[in-house]
Amino acid sequence: MLIDKNETISDAPVCLCNVVLNTKKTLPTLRYNRASNMYQLYCKTCGFKTHERDNKQSVITDWFYSNRAGDRHIRECWVSRYNTQNGTAITLMGTCPKSRS
Image 1 (cartoon, rainbow, N blue to C red):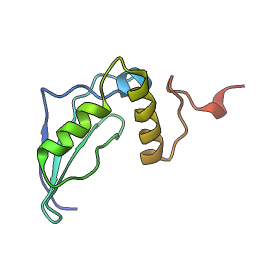
Image 2 (cartoon, rainbow, N blue to C red):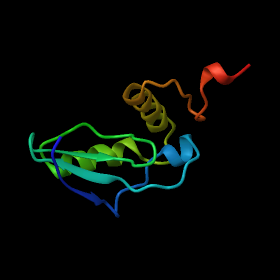
Image 3 (cartoon, helix red, strand yellow):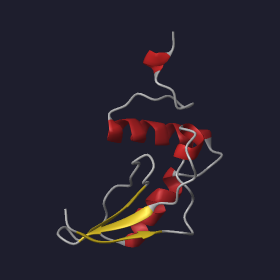
């Protein structure tokens, strides 16, 4: 993948991994793939990412709606999407069901 540049989006909300996974607050990073002419926002801490889109506004909007704090439904969607992207099985409180006895 040819990445033209990476830039942190300072006015975007922090990734919900700080709430769900109890990590440090992280601003998203914007990536541009020159080969496919697509943009993507991702979190350097947990790896959560938006879908690739052909314009910046689309990925910024995706990030805003995916990481809205204080909304249980958004948090549930975030966990589901995170699990799909990373092949994990965390719950809303950031724990793996297998680790509970």
